[in-house]
Length: 304
Image: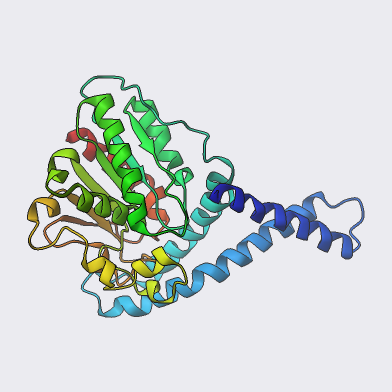
């Protein structure tokens, strides 16, 4: 569903560019002008959406215990996030969502399966580079589309559970969950439903920019799953792992960034008792796209 909606964005921009070009009397030689205009409109809209988040994150992170980032690092993160947003929302998630199929045939019997869980207002297209690398490695994986897009995060738990069962049946091993943003909360909701079975059914949960303790931006969200991610929300506080479940906390490797423009303050993407790792200088989407971080995570999975 999200992919169909996202396709309307570039199509709508193209129609607007054609109309503006026609109104401007550009005549029959519109090709280059329209391309430039289309790119300009996309950049303007992306800048308008990204700028407030970065300014808020920079301001609020001043009092956070995470290492501070300098102005140059913030500017670099902003530029990378702009590029990532155009790729992810304008191409992968709109037009390439089913381009790479799930791999259900492991190249070797000892390969542990991977479940990929995307974040808020995203789909499996976010994982395009990860799916390419996992396919090349012969590692079995399933990448979910968590729907409904604006539903309760609790509602995603069964989808995650089904994917865990699928990977376990294929490999005979408990899978690794790799989660971006809200996907990590969907994983935790699933672990809560699994109760005492969770440490045996899931081998590890690797999160990238997940608002484990919520995010400041959640307080202005008009939709249900956005409000659930509010900083310190009742929903967040009911999630494991808690002090009483150190066995669950040990399952987690939590990557967080001091330039995350969606999940801030930065340390809210960490969990007490987990293996918390800093991905310095990366924007929120960039945490799922950065080549170095992806290589580190995949190398970690191979080492398990």
